[in-house]
Amino acid sequence: HRLETDLREALSRHEFTLRYQPQLDIATNQVSAVEALLRWEHPERGEVSPLQFIGVCEELGLIDEIGRFVLDSATREASAWPAEVKVAVNLSAVQFRSGRLVSVVQAALARSGLDPARLELEVTESLMLEDVAAVRAQLLELKALGCHISLDDFGTGYSSLSYIRQFPFDRIKIDQSFVREIESNKDSLAIIRAVSGLCGSLAIKSTAEGVETPEQFRILEQENCDSVQGYLISHPVHAHQVRSMVDSFR
Ligand code: G
Ligand code: G
Ligand code: MN
Ligand code: NA
Figure 1 (cartoon, rainbow, N blue to C red):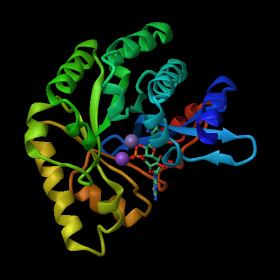
Figure 2: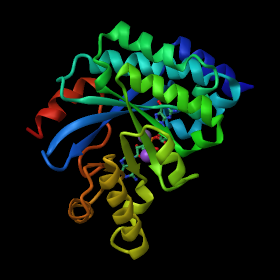
Figure 3: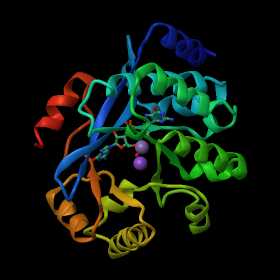
């Protein structure tokens, strides 16, 4: 398997790297967090999107190792940034199977010295297809460490209100597919309004993703979303650019 060999070599050759995309808090107009987005800097193919290799890594049993790299790198890089900036790390549902995720997170926090309250862990609705009791127990342990939990890509998968009640989510990230149609499709606007209202009632923060235009931003502000992420605010940047990007909003 060519890709498997390539992926294993990529890990040992340090070809994986992280970019960081800001989340802007609407009330304060400040960057409250940055999301770590994995990139494979392939010597011949250039920058490869995680869409092209995360699924393969899950199938090949490489996701725990890559996930550990992401957690170690993101916490280490974030420890050098202003303390008001959190870092959000995407987790694959498969990382909840080994039973070692909590200790991997704990080790990354200990090595980096990052305040656990500055680490947000993004999970998707695919988690609901795993062993729900085991997942819930791990999420509660991660919360007990002090980390925050976000439900990513909300509305695209197996959304169920019962999971929102059972799992300790601090934030819901509304999928970019709804934001993209916010002006053209009144159902998308209605769904965003409903999710934002639900979040308000449950004291869960809301983030709208994929915000590309000032008009989308204006509508999301009017709908009481707490924060926005997308190319309008900034494309993902290198770690060394995070500080000046954050400062540019001050
Ligand atoms: O950054 P980009 O648009 O290419 O990301 C594509 C997809 O890959 C998104 O669904 C994103 O959540 C996912 N992704 C990005 N970085 C990571 C990562 O470090 N781990 C996992 N599991 N998924 C990631
Ligand atoms: O699934 P997740 O939300 O973690 O992935 C975020 C993905 O969305 C990343 O691949 C990121 O590069 C991409 N992204 C971020 N902002 C925008 C945007 O404004 N428009 C579009 N089309 N994609 C975006
Ligand atoms: Mn995400
Ligand atoms: Na998302």
